[in-house]
Image (cartoon, rainbow, N blue to C red; front, side, top):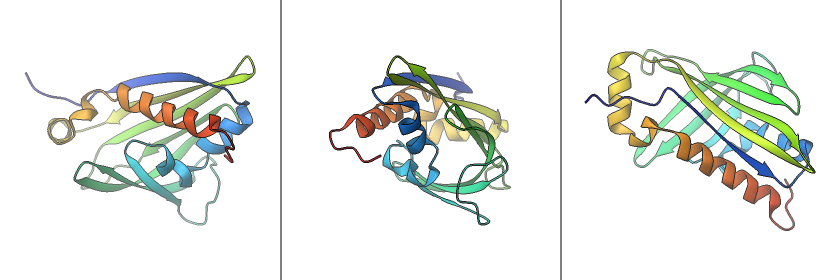
Length: 161
């Protein structure tokens, strides 16, 4: 059996906070390191400071002993409803993955869904990443953990999201 990375997954959670509060956290890519299982931080590039279509940012990642960074491009922004971006392929890392947050009202709270979809990955890299980063074979648990940390951060007493 040849190991491969998972090509798509999603997870959802209901957070006891209004949509605008959840949006304020998940749309600020510079805060991703506060809740992501893998991303340790991000900074806007080329003078950008908020998510708008075409804006770019660099994410710094770590999984166990493996460290890397990726430049990402914002694909969609529908304030309070959807934010999507993709990792940009390079010669060293020729894959590309789309990431997305979708928000919708859920009673007095917010349903937050996180999705990922591999857009392209050469076969060699597919096998290499699956071997080096076993959690990438199915990212569902990672997405669930991300959402759990977002929920805990927002719902914490005295939260200042």
